[in-house]
Length: 409
Image (cartoon, rainbow, N blue to C red; front, side, top):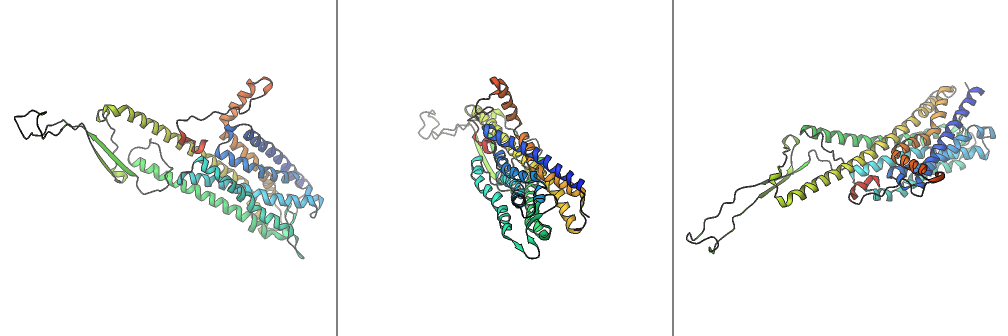
């Protein structure tokens, strides 16, 4: 059973509406990223690169069924199919790149600069791999099946006679990437859960959870430092009749404190968290140690906060990926099981979610950069005639905590 003319018109209108919304949203990503450095966080940089693929995919979906109407052998149909085959899977690859950055940050302690050096490799991978089959399809044809690119109901894409290529070269690789992305987040979640369990066992659940450790032993390494004070007791002098200053064998017996350092693998059940008293530390070191402790604690908290922020937003992109691909995959499986029975609801759902890739990405991008958006808007309103000065909203990072720029620079 084929779709009626009214159903096809509804699908076409939905495709073009969603494509237009995504094009506008993606343009906001590109313009804001280019206009101010405050938007150029590591995760935003990947979204920026992915936006160009979203734009090209939306150009294809905006054509909608006009390519089919022009004829499956027309240049419009062939180019539309080529753009869909090339750029739609690229979005899944960019989501995997974000997850891989999270992996490198958690387990390899990559800095912002190190992540930036990988970007050209991501661009090559995310746009290079899908390009290979998309380009080869131009030259593949057979007597019985004809060209690979042809009518696909929603738009021009892989023709029904080549339906196995849709699974083997399109949906199959996309879901492989989705499962790889899920595996990364599962491993990170397992690590965090075990860290929290260890802290709970020692009664320190409120402490900062350091999840950026490259190696993960079953128990944390604990270095115990104890500083004790004892009274100075003079040693016995060789000549009782001599004073201390006159004794040739005088040895200073003044020992203001002693330090005993023990390091090793300690099970959480044996870890004792004892607060150090201020009078246990020599006065000349007390203030310095206190300042260093709070400085290190604050820096570690900022690094962990930045890491967690990156992880949460990367996982949001993964959720958006599922929203995009689950309905369309169900539609494809249904079409394989019932090739002669087209389901309007599933086809309509596919025409709705697939063009919205750029829109979902822009929503998450704006939530990541919401502070920068508000700052840029305030600066825009303060300028006469709404002309914001170059670099509005950019704040130069403080020089005191270079390590916090691992993810936020």
